[in-house]
Image (cartoon, rainbow, N blue to C red; front, top):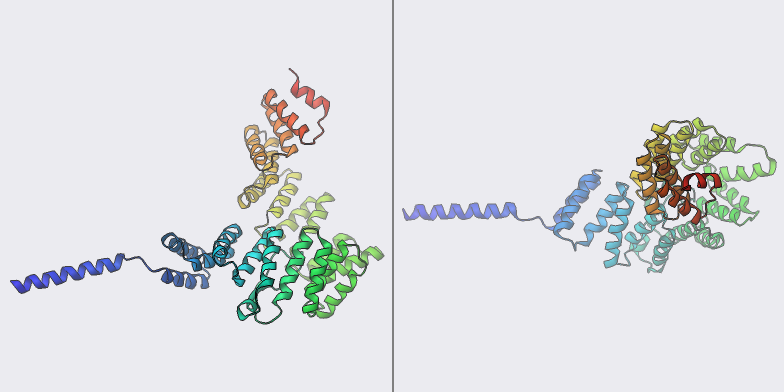
Length: 406
């Protein structure tokens, strides 16, 4: 009997231990390893879910923030990636790889001044294997909207960083500063054609007639460099007036159909010449290359609106809003579509959202006034017209008198 009790107690103890083992939380490094494996398999959403749970249990585990930043980049959640990288860098401010990851994203999303600050910090890091093993953009030219990231070992990472600073300065319209950085990049590495192309663009912004020499240098290094060929042809066409802008853009597209900018330029050209069907075709091709570009969704929506395809325009503006909630232009244009469809209350809502994000938006004030006037809310409409005038819009007297008449 005694022996049976001993055995029963041992069995119960074993069951309790097994239960505790099953319910014990996993260690942080175990969750990180699982997330790394899932991420390597390309299952980004699953990897993020694991890392979210890891950081919920271990909020101070910095390695998980770094990996989740990579995962969010893969999911095109650039703002989320920036947040994670910034949390990591707050703890390890001189970590070269994560600094460069954040700098590249800041450049991609248009935070050019902040990107420059990160790139300059990278240049202060001591030369070491860690800082020589950096990520860089394979085709770093100012019109490339889709950076390709690869890895390099060697001493040329400084030239890539200098080139990126030049690109950011060029985006900020600081052409003289941009040219200096491109000069420095070329001194360190004179075998990279993109550097010459970018310096050529800076020279053109400075009305420097020697820009064509840089494009020629790029073509000597890579005779198939599409952007160098395009820009050189543009300069030559200005001289000889031999080829129309659309012909040049079409030639560029034919040479490399994977580049985004020629589709956007040709779409704009077609839109301005009222060839809206052609503009829609180009914007659609551009979206195949970069479906996260809010300006492309907006542009296609505008072209559809011109063709009175209000349903299609509404859909494109909505997509732009989904991608960028504070995109005031998309809210305004969707409001315009609703106004044309006589859905005045909904139009007022969209104009109001646009004004939350951009309070000085005079056209939004005016258009909201028109929608309110349609609903016979003349007092409110009159206040909106006054706001539109306050922010610089010239309102015709007959419109103002009609709306504001007591």
